[in-house]
Length: 216
Image (cartoon, rainbow, N blue to C red):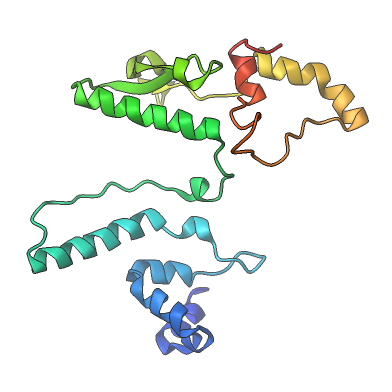
């Protein structure tokens, strides 16, 4: 029942009077389901609950609409079937560094090379990450190599083990060795804004270097 006033408001169209003509045109351009999600209850701070807006499905619907239009015009004869993925977290994360961009590019290139070679059941992987980019190694890792067998609901099932914080790993040990000093003297490493040019633009983050054993 809590959504009834909002639905009535949508039906009456009173809210449209508060939109600029450009915003109203954009709103009406969106699929009906997305319009309804935009009108859901706000969070306690009055913000739109972005995580509940299925942006990934909106993009697919908009592509389907455009392709259908092209079919009617005779400009498209193919078949399209979209597979959605939730991009909520990616959409509000920080900007990628040059390292992030190069790493993702290498992963995508590796995935394409594996598909082109007819190799399946593999996950694109990149190694030697502490070295310069031109010395990285790109290949495929068997999905089964990442899996373990766990008992769930009374049955043994192959699953990928959850990535937990490894208390005996180098990153946490480094943190533990400095925790008291940081807490007492407020000494935290702050690299500042991401640099896309200059000597620090290609720096690898400390956690990864510790995991690779390239930093003590």
